[in-house]
Image 1: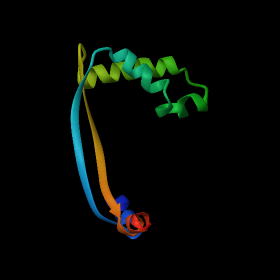
Image 2: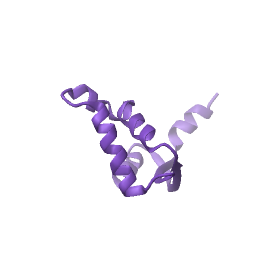
Image 3: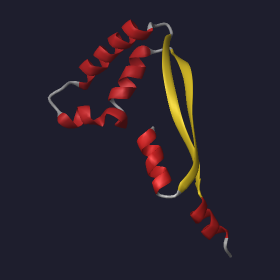
Length: 97
């Protein structure tokens, strides 16, 4: 987070408020969740490289998720990091008629 914060300050964004939001989700269909990861743009590199069967990766992910987080439902932790800031120079320019 610090490198991004430093870059924002360097280009004129200040003040900066950073907050971390954690949540645990119930994933009812672990297999569908794993397939969605493999067949979405999130992991598009897997398909682009070739030589690997995406279904095998989805199956391996399913088993790894079940082992790590359980199933029926799987309790999957996620978090988001929110950066809130203003660039006062840009705000001043936009406020001028």
